[in-house]
Image (cartoon, rainbow, N blue to C red; front, side):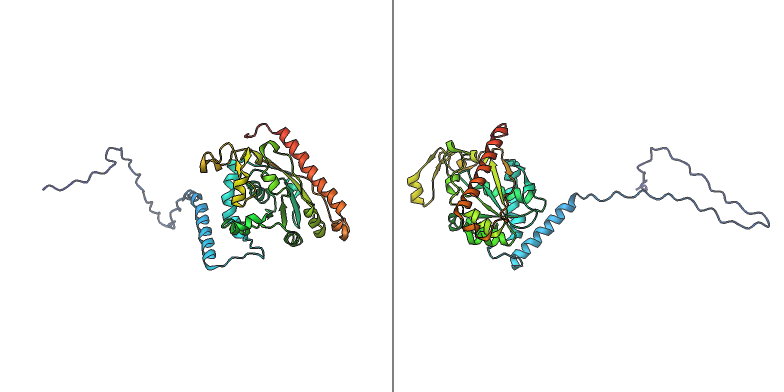
Length: 332
């Protein structure tokens, strides 16, 4: 067999002849000089490695560290069961797509929430299901410069439901009682309350954006005792997520719940009817009402509590009307 001939890939390219290097010989009496060093050109710096994967690496590492702490129990909860790490890394992340993409919440007046110290945020309540409270939590945390956490006061029913009870505690919710609220305020926490309660969240669609009674002013008394400001908050958009056109009261009594909503889609479409409508939300925080200028016995003055309660309610109602006039559409 004939020897194989290796054919280079660039056989068909014209070859350049390299110039011959001629070495000069020094004449007699001359000192041989070293050849001049050839000028070397530094290679171009390599491009920095793409940081595309770095973010994912950090996320994966953080997630694994989070799971390790969960398994080993190396995490902290406060006296109320609030788990800050779980709230920040899991619960907030689950609520954020609903907040950012679905309801497209717009926040105004976030500067009215103090940068530190206790404050009581008082908001209207609506929507058949309490999604407005969850969206309010995300709004405060994600838009406040100090990324403050809102501790919501919830009704007894929340802590009677399996799974919901545990999640509510982990997210920082606590029972709507004056003692718990005062402890949180005196500890410098932001506390959220929706005084309308079930009367607000379960009102008919025809009464939307009409505030119900604010109770007997218990939240004002708590703020006065703690000496913390009251921040009125108005939420527009939640009323239309489940237009409640009826209430099956008999079924509600059998189930032990305040109301059984009937909407244009529920219960007719089954589980699909529980999907909220993608309305456009606006949350506005009003100017804080200071309480630290009152005497200690002011919390026992029923007339003062009535006046402050009415002032907060009127401010929220007025802002609701103003936001409704300004919005272009329920969905845009």
